[in-house]
Figure 1 (cartoon, helix red, strand yellow):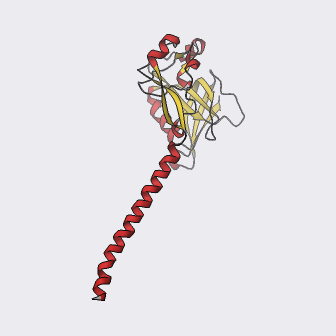
Figure 2: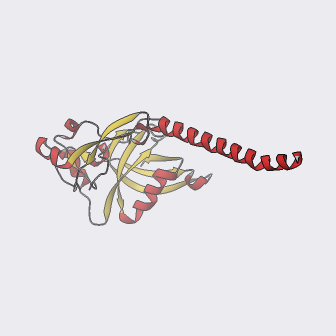
Figure 3: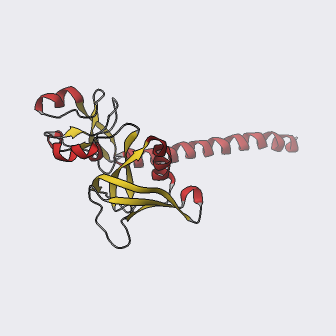
Length: 207
């Protein structure tokens, strides 16, 4: 009889233990979500599709731009947070409805002239480490882009040769020294975007 009771209690003990484990996992997950979402950032997004060349003024801001609150963890380093910062600038690439507005997609009229792309060209923004010699990564500079640690590969790979920098902004954090926008052929866009996401780092070597 006693043995039967003990055998019957085993499934009950397992069920209780499983329940406690599940509760702990839910609690731990909730805490992790709270940790991510605790700090927020207010950034600007496109309220409707913004086409390249669109100028921003007091009048057009209300038509094209709205604010969005997101977890600070997911805010781009170069996100525009103040509407007044956009006045007098124009879009240098298309910005889809709901997309973040970053400093890499807007420029003054003078600088925007550099973004006039020829047929088959695109402007792509990537985070890079500066050249070892400390060369300035300013607009108009020609660079080679070298990817390290792409897909876990131990060797470095020459990803793009003779790329023209259209715009350069300082990047925050430890992952990069700058965020540059370069002129590339359509066929090079996918590999460059992939490297920006998955490479351990990208180096910009001045030509």
